[in-house]
Length: 113
Image (tube, rainbow, N blue to C red; front, side, top):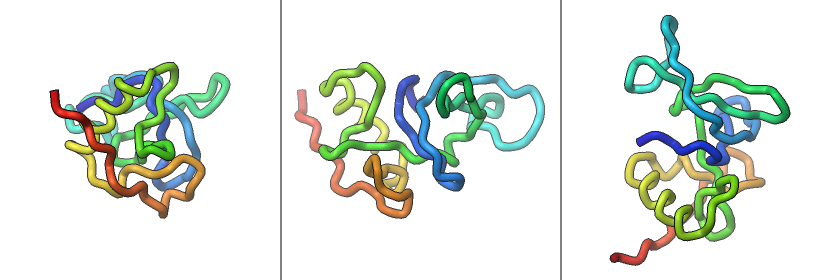
């Protein structure tokens, strides 16, 4: 599953925060997504962007353990949170404002349709 644009993330090793700003196709080189050809474009402020693989990202969540996104309302964020919990391990979700060593706990419950 692709992490949508606008999702707030933290680099797992370097510790800085940003948001997903798209995908970039990489013609040569190591460290690409499972599709073998792309990396996420991470907006780290102003005009600064960095190319990064999914394995290097933690997803930032709010006090209700919902994925934090730019300009998205709670119902969509709740749905996306459930989808991402289905493909990423629990340690990949961290509360905004905490160090990357402190994972979020208890994913939110999504009402069944």
